[in-house]
Image (cartoon, rainbow over all chains, first blue to last red; front, side, top):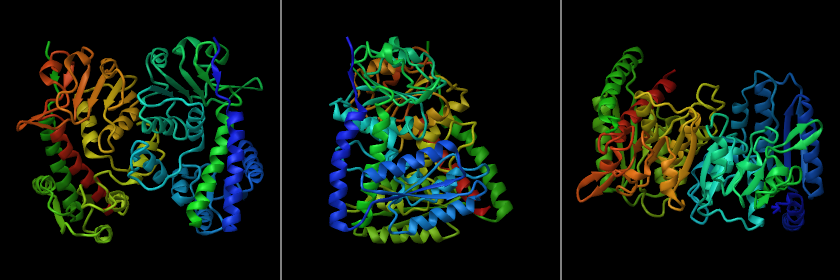
Length: 292
Length: 292
């Protein structure tokens, strides 16, 4: 039997329409256009490509992405000064700092210079701390408002739109990065899932994966997770983006997994399109909070 | 066969001697006495008792605990003003805000007013965020210096002193509080354990516990975890402090568990004494960082 496809492209399209209406309403009511500043030092090709993609995405949604590019020779002080200036600009509602930053720059220090209320990418330590400390969904959060990195937020929203139950389910997250694995684990925990975080040092990874009602892969190794690692009927969310001979391949062996899983994200067209739309939602939310 | 007892009382005593030497050296070198301010509003009996205990503990270690007590009628603004004043005082190196705060006060807002560098109790969102984002131990941390809540830090140190291996082990943490369960999970993850976080909504809790090489209990329910939930030879760390008819009892059914586990903390005398000593260590560390 073949799994239900978690069609991120289709869901993102639906969400785009919802977002477009919300942006139009916000602009009409306030006269403000939600604006993100994308900050970069140097010309890392992937960063250049991504910055341009963000600019197109935002424009298509009635919002603006400004690019702020410093030379490769920029110092940490110059980056921090730029971020500090953007923090103070009322017409900039979100700031994203692209990585990698040039060698010798303390990336943590530059990110810490961000205003948490403009950190729509969810990389600031205050936003990470609030997510880590937030109470389960449905109770008073116990922390101030915060932003969640767009990729795990998108994975959660995609599951929600397909009616996936989290409460009491066993979720296994493979990968413990700060932009996907760990925030994903915390988001699942907030939804009352039992959560196991696995990584490169995990023993018996296939056995642990087989326990998952919800299996999330964010390791960056093409097709590492095989079909026989998946519990029949499980929900499989693949965050992997691996280039295999020019073809984009996930962390899950899709052809095998689709025969076992109950629901599965394709790659491409699963979690990827959700990331973009969640970043847009974060920006609109930031603009709303700042415009009052 | 009976388990090795993780004797927190004995380890804390050893650590006290080490700490006393370090405090004496610091005081002789700098002329500075590490000082913590304990802030409270109202006279909650447990808080009063704990503040006095901290004062005695610090005095015994050659350090100082100042008590700053506001009336039960204190407003949020008054609490924040007191914390702000203490943040600025160079002779105060650590600040602990006791809970519960009086009704109507936004505890998160008061805690957020703390200077992260004086938050020796590890409750500030910046410290929680840095712990959440910190790289595995042995690699560059990727975040600024931070403080970890004393209770989970003490559990980790107790295991370390008995030579417990974390790398690749499966650790199960029962409980997801901000002061024990979640930070404990993150600390174990940093040590390359595979970590499962369970809680009140977890299905098949006994089965999951039985997988644990390291089982940490922080739920606050007397003897909830039974002997047959424990994998033979597992390390059992009990953070529970439950009053059962005037007797202090852990979250683990000790008499059963001690026959199955490889190592186990008693209650009392296990994780409790470690908490005190870790708070002292955090205060000395804060004083060192601030004294340069």
